[in-house]
Length: 428
Image (cartoon, rainbow, N blue to C red; front, side, top):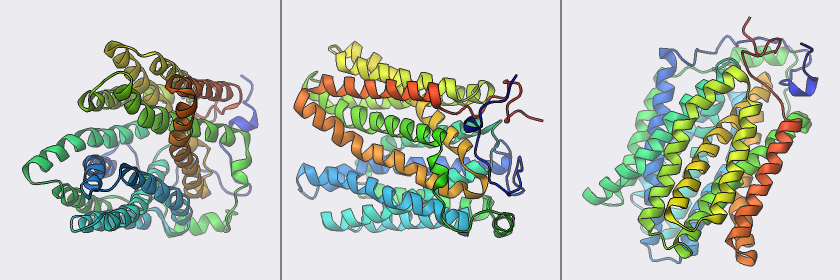
């Protein structure tokens, strides 16, 4: 079989030594990795409870609904600022200091939120906590990237996603119980307690995957010591950036922001029904995640990512046509299926494309595309729905996802697949 075109392969650094596995990497399926996966579950548990408490607590101060939604937008803005900076600093300072620091910031902000007495104190603490959250999420994803190889990366990232999503599914239910038994404020103490447990796991049981000796050796071998953004001007990276933006716009915009309003205003669903639909989508995505990771490792990322985008596009079409409760269930399940394939696939491809000596910088800046999609998506679909109606907004989002699928199929990279003979990612 003839070799693939050069722009379909993960970028390599001129003059830098190429290793299949950095000396600091650990086996993502060994006992050594278990504390990291447990930390993801605990983080998701506290964050899921926080998702329940955040809007309810903000509303309890008697502020307008706009200020309640502003809390969520402020959290997204914190990620927009913190993600690229975190990625750059992990390459220079190491991964653990940023991950541990982010967890500490998030934990202290939760503790102080327990004592907040007005909306503005709560908003500021939530923004600060968002910065810490971005540091943890981005830094821990980079640790996972260091700890995996192309042959097992799909499955390992699927386990990470499964642990995180399981916690975020259980978290709101547990937060509801805490709110009933103790009070709404107690959820912030619970979230802070989960961060204390995560702290001990990170400090004592998780290894630094980018130690100082490794950083210095890479720089002496030709690795860049200054910020170089030329790695983002390659065709495969631009394609995966477009795909990432589209998935985020669909997830947070058409489904996260538009669907609940559409279901309540036009279909007459109750808040409880809508909550159940959101949980159903999360559960379906959770079920799909690991099989998708396994198949991506075996057959390659590209085909499954294209299929995931098309399924997401189909879910947008179904959401535009729903008129019965049964149709809502089908559309929501299709969305969960597409999201489970699309989000996992885009993240793994991004990690595959990251240069080894600039992996943190690459992934931190790549997260910008996801965050921009999360901010622009709700605004754009809301504008379209306001002017042209809900159906047009869903159909427009679906059409954009189909365009993303075509672009990925035609120009996107294939970075995995241990059953594809002659590929760079085959085991030797």
